[in-house]
Length: 417
Image (tube, rainbow, N blue to C red):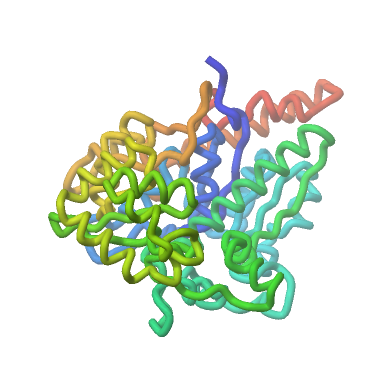
């Protein structure tokens, strides 16, 4: 069995809340060792996120993106704690932080300071609007950037008020962007050596994520129209319809060949001879009539039956599910899309699951089987490792070993593995 792609890589993770921790979560799923440096006292604010105080310290949102990490609580303004943090960074491949621009530099661990003692560091800063530009110092969280990026304006129908996406989409996509950037820098370092500074902005990442909406405006000067639950194709056969059991199905019939197949599947070959429905443009013009026919036909069966039979026939169709229904689909278990996890001390059930990285690999793929850390859970272990590593490095230095970095690598992992 091959090792995981990031086995042997260490991440000094100063990030908190969601965007940064999601980035290091993806790196951890791929085998990296992640040391989570938290503030003394409360730690990462996500530990107490939500209204159910029984989960304080291990809130579900925290569990989602911190499995398998190690935690140490430090006050970077305390000289002893600062030296511990510096020691971790000195022996790490990646530093990840998402303080407001300039904060970590004032604490003594900015990029220039760090690369002076670890020139090979991959240093990734995540912020709302980036480390440069006129908006640099503006505060931002997920819903703020959903607003400023235009993301809120894309959903719904014309005339509807803007609507926030119902999960932290910006945080998640920013974290994924940061992880992608870190992997790119690690690959370049492996090929040509040297560290790198990565500047990830939530606004930039959001606009990149929205390329299919932003670039049409940049090319034509016109914003895309809001289409509600109809796809951007504008086809009346790419929309939501109510089935016989009152559940909704989403159809995605957009191409001419798909429409012809769809008509035959429903026994409505007459549509193929109807001049109102002869091509996509005509179907747009006569969408109300076509949708009325489809709605009447779909009343004959349940949403689950339509989803199954249309999908098996090659017609894009999906039943609208609640999140709980989607998360319980047996398909996810068959693909390893969920990872079982034992989290001691949870009030309802210690045997839970988290979502995997979103892709599979034939060997050494993403996985984790260790729970998120309790605040400061690994302080003794990490401090002991730093003492041992320093002693080992001093011994190697005294014996005039040509490459001291080999000694550092030999004691790379906190647990000695």
